[in-house]
Length: 194
Length: 74
Image (cartoon, rainbow over all chains, first blue to last red; front, side, top):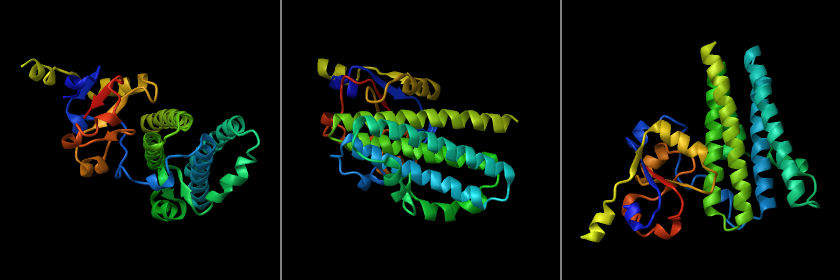
């Protein structure tokens, strides 16, 4: 139908979602959309993303401290470090957008006890997941699920935003999540092959 | 008759691998992934970044879509 309505390039996913074997996000379209109004400035969006990344790092560190399994502990240290790198890049971006905007790190600390990447509550998510994260594969699967939800959330935010510069920030965040997912995919391959 | 022909203009099919390559090759903001299923199906699982427009509402939602963007539909 779309091609008959002036759409220049239309492709049909053969077999639909049943045939799709790539990443999948879940939840309704409105999930966590109340985190944004739609008129956020690029700096506001970077601050929100920073607090979500910080929240995920808190979750990884919570589990890292609780686990008694050495390999799981070191995996969570690596995952937390990736979030640290994300935060560093967001701080640099914030510095470029808002040179007099203050210290992102102190703004991000508001995430304690709050939300983490993908829009989950840190404490509730820790309680729900801490007891069964006992193999590297389960940990990486969970990390991939979180990053996929985050990718989807940033892209849904981009559909809501009215500001082109904020949209560009969200696309940059989505690209970061994709790169992170590719890295996790390689880790998973190594774990399942080894 | 001509209009009817245009409505049924064939579109290219992509399998899952081709669709993943398509998404990977595109820059964010330059393409659309359109989910035309019902909200419950979307909720169960969807391709990240998909825009949900159930098929019966597609005509009314056309102004939310960019016809210049390559669009993958499922």
